[in-house]
Length: 192
Image 1 (tube, rainbow, N blue to C red):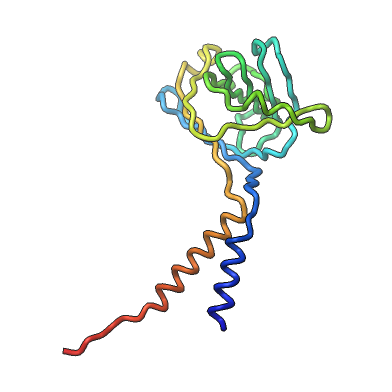
Image 2 (cartoon, one colour):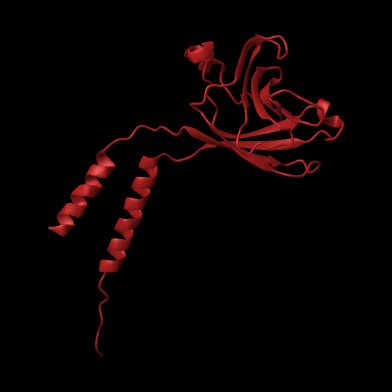
């Protein structure tokens, strides 16, 4: 009876389809050029409405800019840490600085659009829109503006989802089933 109950519970847990709903993304920025030192990472809740959305911005030559303030883990020594993702100029990139703007010495990475233009079709409160981030690993480079405190350098950005609870549940059930199978295995002894 106990085996039947465990099998039924495992079957229901696996069969119950939970939507892929990873709301938190992990951004890992790694220096691959060797000039700068100090890799960093931060997390961003994708359901969070951006603090600033500029479309067809003159600053980024007919692109989109999305900025967030106070992002955990993105400290650069400024009081208010901000991140700006943008498209348009040189495909796009990421700026890290005070309130999403660029004081001297902040990091600005170009050459890859990390958000999609098509993501700005869903209206949100305050007349702003929710961006959709591209997942994967991208090679980017710093801009010439960083030549003062930071020389031109290359970076690798990895954007990954934090697994949702359903994924963790299936993994725990799988480990439990493997452990149960190993525990129940009988060792055959032969007498000589």
